[in-house]
Length: 85
Image (cartoon, rainbow, N blue to C red):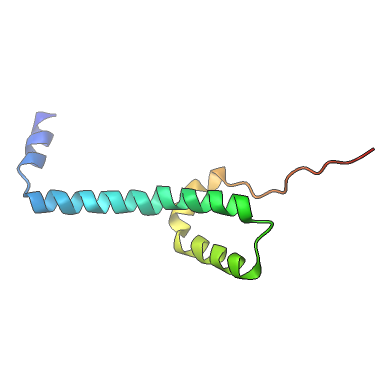
């Protein structure tokens, strides 16, 4: 374990900054933004106008890899209707 920490500590600071930036941007692109897109789509899916629906399709296309990772949790089934007897 100490050899890994020593190897990381021996890297130039610019390399560590770039690696951290890549890690942060990849987490943002693959997990955080698709999560926001999911909640946005879940709240507006059935009431969106045509322009908003086109924006939703753009977001799905742009963040597709992350949405694919979160896809087991997506649920766009309509809400249950109340039937009056």
